[in-house]
Length: 481
Image 1 (cartoon, rainbow, N blue to C red):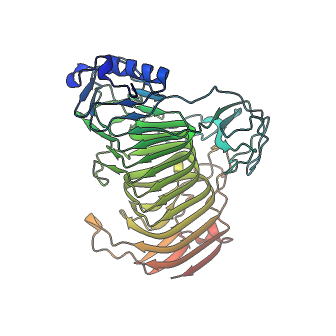
Image 2: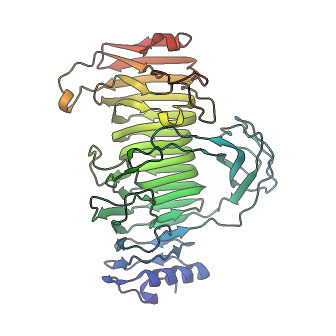
Image 3: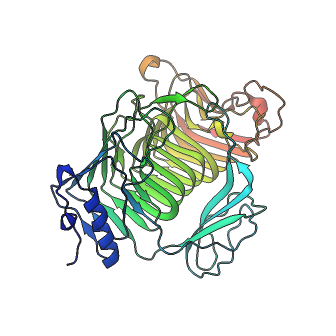
């Protein structure tokens, strides 16, 4: 016996019998023996609305099989369907403090590690707006090589490291391949009860190839989803040649007591390092405003998106270093705050701005933007490459920086579409007037860019630095159209 099948443990694969108990047992045996799992071609495995989780520690091939995931009347919405736990035991990492920009720390383990650190005595990302909150403990996640080198430097200052965790990076890659998964959507009350029922990846050095996920049965209400592919607390994960489905927008009452649309995701990344998405698409129209943006990320580092078509990219609570190339982004556009270098190449994007710096987290990006050979379709009356909104009266837990260096080389502004078709673009600016009308004392002003360079811009009459020139009068600006 060199493979494990679900049928060996009683799976029917007829689309009606609950096959999840057999799936769980098959993976238990595969893990014990160190053997791969293979689904039966043509099988349809039904997963009933009963919380069960299959732990995966070996290569799994679902090619040619399908799964129907019934979330109606679900008894426990938090448990994943498939869990890839980290290899090796969690250990603390010996740190008492860290400096932003640090690229070496002693590594007594002598092997490559995924490390996450916290300062529980400091709060960051103190959110503003309809979903306001009290923020989160300062945290960062990064790779540490065997000799102590950090391929990507620390983002925050840590006066204290109150807790930490480290996991070794497995030498062998684990691969999930193929399979068509269909979620029959939940009927829960529309509130922030994020549903799992997903593939949760916490194992470093993992590949996901050729998976398709559909959603059916959405009604006029339901709870949001936290991502059918959920990648967290790990490093070196590649997702390629996959097809995803955006979720319908439902409304609830936010923490500020006003109605808000709930984010619901088919892809979610949290505290994940060196993660790439290549040749991925979505089933729903990227311009259909009935569906939420496909992906959300928090606390991530070194993300890459290459040849993808998604309704949105979102670095929610910050990304350190991101590359988006050969990609098309739809109605919810490109949203980002964070650190490091953000590269956007050969990419086409829609939106009020080409890049929206999230106002609920202070519009901060401490680093550099490189934009090369891109196309922007402005929505509405939007005429700024970067959109920001921070009146300087709220403490987000950190100083708020506008991108310190901006290099744009090759940028086409497309003619307006829809109800604004036929309008002349005229002038554009790199930045809007982000201050608005302050509602109190300006105690936390934004730190302006040092320099911005623009060349080879098409489709506009002129390019200015800021709609309020006084805000960036110290910024070095060059424009060669």
